[in-house]
Length: 194
View 1 (tube, rainbow, N blue to C red):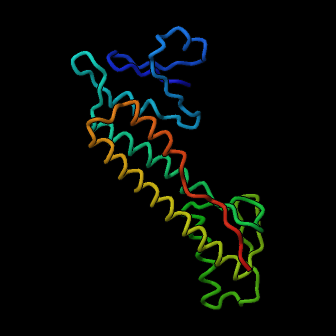
View 2: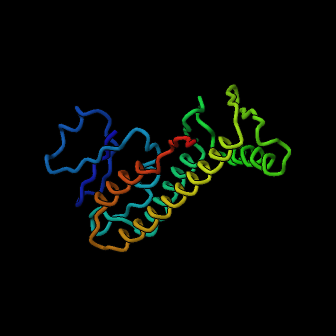
View 3: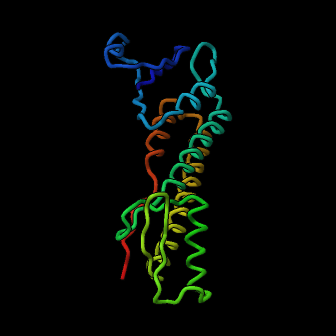
């Protein structure tokens, strides 16, 4: 999908297919929208305004809409799971999964499970046999990952504020920045250490 942005023109158009693009003026700016940015129009279109016949941004609305998009992407990442070597499935990072993992760790800490016992961690059709050390590692990795995702959200928020406070930043520059930043999240792969 492409979005056509013309400064000095009052239109933003969604363009599907490269054949249509060839019919526009060569100075037209096109922004490629990755397929996984499904709600980009929800944040671009409401935040546009017309200033003396030119395309402009309502920076307050753009700030709110961009942060909502980032929060949605953060939630997807936060709950999307992590991969830990030695476990044959993606370990969920939802609140429910975090509680299950923490409960198993507490059972080891409280002596409900002996240090040499194993426990079964079951998620849907998947199961993994966990030792005390392995579930402790998974617990720490999940906590670290979720916190890193929230930290990244805050970093993006800070830059959104900076960019939108800079009156020289154009809509095109802002959208291009945001699309790049939406694909920069912490790694979700962890190597189990002995």
